[in-house]
Image (cartoon, rainbow, N blue to C red; front, side):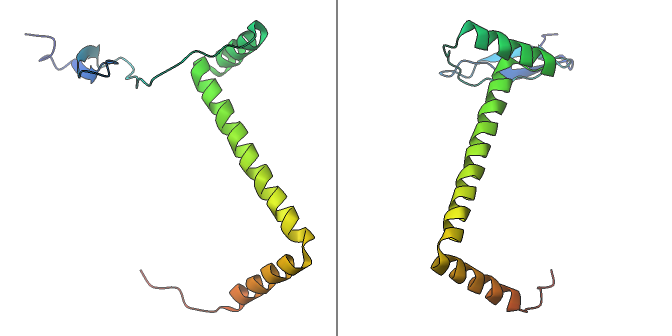
Length: 115
């Protein structure tokens, strides 16, 4: 019996982008999703710190970098929203219009639809 026909084997696409080759993988293996990667240059100290964080988390360094980039992006988005809110509060005309809109929304009394 060929390994492909055996129930304890599954197939998964390989990393080859140009073709749809198949690799054999035991059902007990971890299915990995391959994405294009690149190399970035960082100071040796930064690399060592990244590897230490990855070791403590039990994650690959690439996942730690992805999480840190996402966190930085989220923080930047929140900082921009906060700055916009402060600008709104500093303009008496704009904050009055905002408050009037909020009062209008609070006064709106419509029943919720039944789903």
